[in-house]
Image (tube, rainbow, N blue to C red; front, top):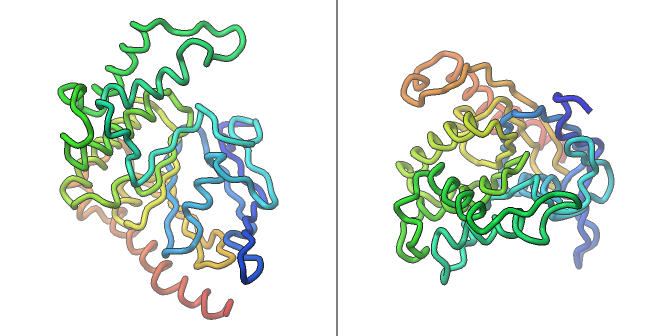
Length: 276
């Protein structure tokens, strides 16, 4: 295993049994993701983006093919792969601190570490939780419950919970999809800063072309389902750190944006008609 194949997906297909027979969601998915790379999955609704993300997370098992992370087969969920969903999934009766601490205790607390690893003390667990909240700018809201904070803040708690586990891979399933445009833009900018600081490998599902170009090193464009597969992969050659305003009229940014739009609304349409 080398850094260029930190996440390795080879010949992956995903089929489901339905009342009308077998449904093939994904076919022949081949993808290599480098360590520290930010990759987005984009495509029309029903193309299997979330299905592919769930396979990488180990939440589902492929019908055929191979998935590896850091040279090990992905056979189920693991703390090295943290998931942030569109729904923040916070427990409403717990404070922001307690929601994050719950995951921290699970991964680093007594009885949770691998053989030979030392479990962290209560003070260390608390410090780790506070550090995660500080990373997403929520130290001031640590003792508030989900019902007392905004939608954007809830999403930041979900991201803090994931980051607190020090995952090697951060998996994001449209985490900003339900937010208003201004809150979404703010969290995108914060995510850019967090990724720089944590050096995380990120795989993100999105419907937003601008979000994909702004955040990504590569954009993986999926064909329409059923039997969706990877249509094209676009490298985004924009230097980091990236500034939203500076990129607004940058020729490379605009060209990448046009390439994705052309695939989704022109080239992909032709491919879909030919397949039909």
